[in-house]
Amino acid sequence: MIENQDTVKPSPPWWIDLCLAIGGIGCDWYCAFKWFSGRYSYCSEPVLRGMVLTVVFCAFVAVLAVCVGKAKPREALQVFFVGSWALFGCIFIGLEGGWPGQPR
Image (tube, rainbow, N blue to C red; front, side, top):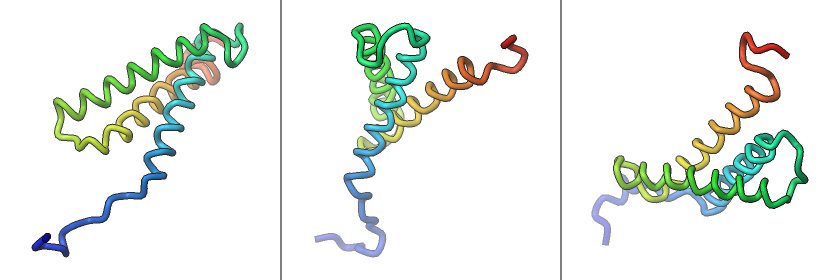
């Protein structure tokens, strides 16, 4: 039995983790599609291969944050989503909006 029940926080619902995972995979898919500049269809082999490699890289960073850092295992999905979102932001700004000083 837990002695200090006042200090125990309930864990967030499972659907939040599911949304973070789906959002991260969606961001990685967009990055892979934009890397090929729309030359291939949405579900072509090069786009899916690039998405899988990007998902594996972001997942590796998340697992590394848990193993080396002081993150909890459930926080790995948050790290995965933040990494995917940061990559999405760089691709979206760099390819769509243009970096400052980049010719259009």
